[in-house]
Length: 179
Image 1 (cartoon, one colour):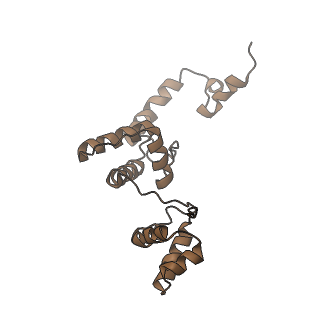
Image 2 (cartoon, one colour):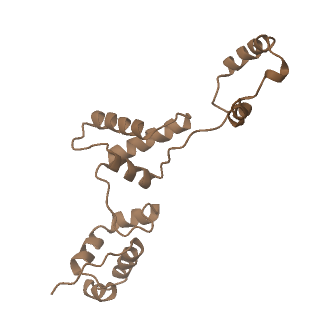
């Protein structure tokens, strides 16, 4: 009769590795953690990877660690994402998938598909959020602002002050009942 596989958390895997390094045998680890010997061997074999994930806290709270199938694509894409965000370029999911396929073509990788499932996993693993960028620093070119400071008084001269609204005040038109 075989035991049912026990799924260990990342913390338990680290504890198991440390216990093995202190001199506990694999047989004793079976009794301590209540899992199979093959599972212990696999954890001990992957201890370098498990330690790296523990240091990064990338999979904190996750029981099963699934390694990335295409780490070079994900690494290149996250670098592109960071540089695009630094330049205040708005990024959507479809743009991310398109850029991933460009990276795949450049690397010559096969069997990779940038679908919604991949995108969701990529976003969760790398803490990527698609939000509207806001901020006034990079919104408008300064030359354009200088040009409008001379043009705007000429355009507004045709209107009375009571007929000039700020863009924040346009909601007044939608709040008014129809006449």
